[in-house]
Length: 469
Image (cartoon, rainbow, N blue to C red; front, side, top):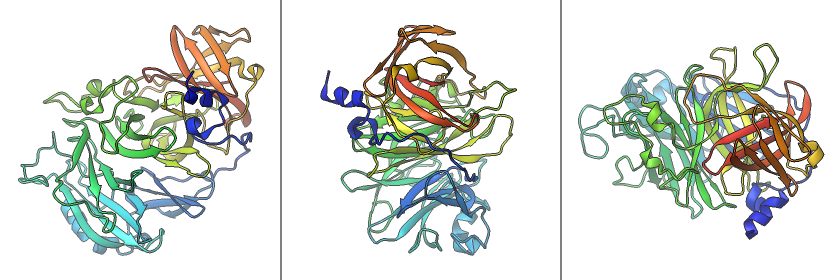
């Protein structure tokens, strides 16, 4: 057993789990729901903010009760007043009257930089620029466009623009690496996901990079919404991506890969180089070609039967991630639709943990203040509903299988195997001959209005399972 494995077994050391263990139980939450598509998170002071498409934004102090700041692109929006005048250049170029997924970062001058973007929608004719404010809630003043795509003729790298290999310049996320360098990852469909090194003093890209370095994607692969987060415990950069289409029938799902370097190469748990995640030449939306890539953290699911009140998500995606240096907790923030609710969408937050191999595990239920705690074998045993995200990109909603974790360490029911609780809360589960490692976590099931035992586990190849008791 290595030192890292020994730390993991105790379930209370931030070096492996991702945060400390104060032995607190799940709370009885009161939620204030909001709709922000493509939420990108930033925390300043004691407040979390999310900024999303259509110049929407919200804030919260606890990631459960949200307050809307803005909701649509109009000249009265407090983030960018007189937006159609202020950002006239981008609306003219993109031939659009709305804005897509932005990102906000605070630079060393103490100001907030909003990376805004617009796209025509039926083509990759897009632009990306930056606006600046002294206050996070605005007003933001435009500093200008610095990247365009979808043009006829010469592109940003000096060659003729080709949507099969060049990016659609939307969905930016700007972050500092652990050495203090500033980067921006971006891209959606078209030629893939790219990364640029940025000037931390001006907020613009360093010169002579063109579109930057490609991380993955070719031939209009349905991959978008990149977000990179560094974890100081595992010392990896994690690249989170959304595969599939964002609507209720689109099969949106969240995946992860990792690298020791901010600009890659990124690999998944099965050892795939994410540069190979791309559609075949001459294809369009070739989902089968990209399905094997990335650790699939979450797709459409429902823990309840259609006739029951249940907890589920449809097409969850376009996530951001917040790592709290003080608490060592990691939060996955995303938008999702829901079973039997059409295209309605809301913001959701789930905790992320790291398994013993340093891969992220998603908590099955939304965050309600829960923390890891010492779980007894008796509390962990019992009947569970299992959700397996699998690797497919599908509109089908995953429904549960039922198994029982018996006190003698066997698993019976619709799947068979063995299980072990190690240390405070580590879960080692073997299902149908495949070994999975992860955690037992007591969470709040808001549909049943009770605290329940859950587990989240991952195989060595990156196949996930969730269980709720």
